[in-house]
Amino acid sequence: MPLDSSPESPVPVRVVALEISKWIGRLGFIWVDGQLAQVFRRPGAATVFFILRDPSADVSLQATCAREIFESIQPPLEEGARIAAFGRPTFYVPRGALQFAVSDIRPIGVGELLARIERLKALLRAEGLFAPERKRPLPFLPRTVGLICGRGSAAERDVVENARRRWPAVRFAIENVAVQGVYAVAEVVAALQRLDSNPEVDVIVIARGGGSVEDLLPFSDETLVRAVARCRTPVVSAIGHETDQPLLDFVADVAASTPTDAARRIVPDVAEETARITGLRQRAWDAVIRRIDGEQRRLRELRSRPVLAFPERDIDRRAREVEVLVRSGRRCLDAALSAGRDHTAHLLARLRALSPAATLQRGYAIVQDAAGHVVRDALEVGDGDHLGVRLSRGRLGVTVVEREAAVGTP
Image 1 (cartoon, one colour):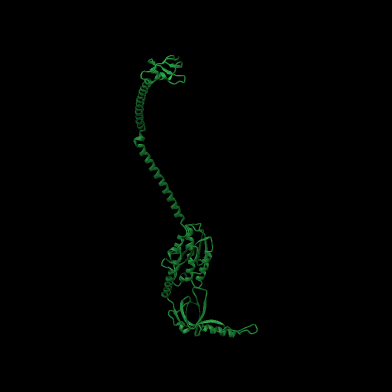
Image 2 (spheres, rainbow, N blue to C red):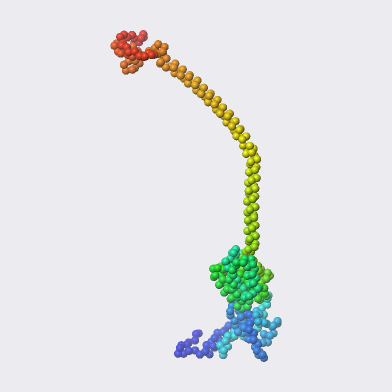
């Protein structure tokens, strides 16, 4: 139940402290995973004081342990060691301080650390954070390279010097952070977020030299791995030597074996690119020369053919063919004209034979009445009618003075 209090009736400090002590006491005995720091042994004292730090966060806990328990552990514990401490959280009322009373200590060896990393690795892989389709390609020539490394470290020199040796104009945005110890994860994540939010940074390199498994633990931390997975900027991991492989290598877009290898991957080599351009230009020149040589050879082959080597022969042959066709055409035309003349003469002869003029030339005449109608019967006209008589040459006007019907006419 909450304490009743008011400005007129405040709760004494001792009451608050006692209530806090009660609540903390309810936690009971628990195992705590932490990193040993600031060990203090008072001469002749039966208690050892030390700090338990969380390797992944800026959180610490004051702890006490019986000296005989602390010194019974072999090999002796040193600051920075990873331990599992069994004890009970207590609240020391006189000083208002939280303490962790340790009754047992188990050093966490390299084997246990590696086992924990493997379990975390399996979990992150199941979530798809290591999937190849999540990997992004590095830019060919980044505007600015973000570099996260220790201050004045060999890793920084390796990346910067080798990158500038390959591409002198490369620019860096360097974030110097702690690369081991309790503050490493928090500082690396903060630097990563700053570089990822910088629009000028096209690629981020996280670099550190070699070290023990414990030294490289921050780069297998779940918080850092997930922060890298959330980055919009491609990330290159360059941690330790070739045999070192923290979880950061699996989630990064590119895992370099060493910081020097990272420098080789983030920028092109100006000498190699120049040589490549020279080679491509030579290949293009050779291709053009081969094309020209091929076309010239094809032209020579075409010119060597008889139709092009001696074109007048074909012209002469065609000229003879034209002459033959002209003569044949003339013969056909003459024959057609001759046949036409014969046909015309035959038609003219038939026309003349059938023409009334030819009949008139033989002494016949055509008699027409006043209306111009041909008179074929004597009974068609009367006495005194004026008739026209058409002769072979000329025309006569006559008057009927006598008619005689043809024999047999009714």
